[in-house]
Length: 375
Image 1: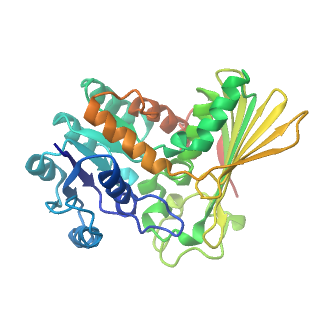
Image 2 (image 1 turned 30 degrees about the vertical axis):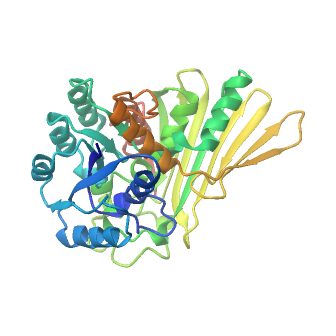
């Protein structure tokens, strides 16, 4: 029998067509899986924007993806969609500020969830409470979309370190996005998006934890370049995205943070919205005893791992992979088999990543975090 699936959110995360170079598109991955591996049936789409739902649904039906889309119903109310179509699993792809009630509604009905990052833009206590609610149903399958954990390059590095019994001493994450290609006003409003470290750089916050273990949040120190700073006046901000937006709700142009892992290792994260065109700069470095490992362009088809060894020539490994497809398949298989052992990012784990990203982006009001803006 086909697994009944629904989408909450009809935007680019679930249906593609976002910023140039964006790889998010769960609907297309489900079409691939339905053709090749899994028996699936999309039964519903929920979104406040009826026109957007009709647009993406008509496009999907035109793809001739078998009967995957033939019986889809659209709703502007999530709970009505859940009650009428009775999906077994949902893909939640909504803006950061919209999380919370959606997950609660699904959990009450025993609906399994794939939740795109970030899991919220609210303070950590908010997602901690959600996690307690989800924990009350241990049979519930929940996967969070930190797809870089599933990337072949990431797993290659994991195995490389494990086979050589190497532990990171220093981890450096650097993420600089092409801001001119991001024309969504929500993204530029830190009240709605949480800010770019939490909304976007959260993937590298997650990789920091995935490779280095837990971070002592009391050691986090961050500084930023604010939108009000003379040096923070960007030359090609998309038209209209900051019109009428109070200066205190505008996002930092660059952020730099340092911290210490529970293991004793040190780490850093630099995030900026300074690149033009549509090419991002993304690099992730691990320094260990006798070796430096660099993960380059993990979002692109040109992803590669470069290893600098103390005694060997530089080695370069190239990876073409679709971690989005991998995480979607693993989630759906987990729902089918009631076995979540292959899911690499649980909700509880994502809560810890949220804590780090939130602390770097916003601070917590505690003296231990020194968060300031260059003026």
